Amino acid sequence: MKAKAVKVIVKEIRFGPNTDEHDYNFKLKHAEKFLNEGAKVKAYVFFKGRSILFKDKGEILLLKFAQDLEELGKVEQLPRLEGKRMTMFLTPKKKVK
Image (cartoon, rainbow, N blue to C red; front, side):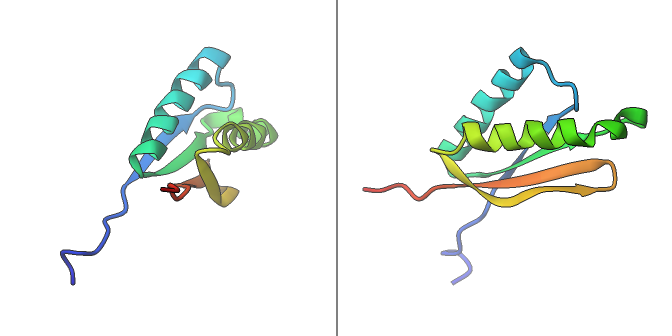
């Protein structure tokens, strides 16, 4: 029974609150690859020092990320601030055969 259990793989993608467009697209392509492989994606914005003032920027970035990956995965957990991190989980959608 243990051998037949599906192992859930979680891949992490880290953003800063001021992530540029090119970096964002680069990480978006990685997330697409992870979701196609069937892994969950944990996207988070890490706030260093005084950048915690830009909580709204981080949330907008994560929601945009979720919207761009809408056709490949669905949001399991909306952005939530935990200490200096704002995290969000995405799970791959079931493939229709």
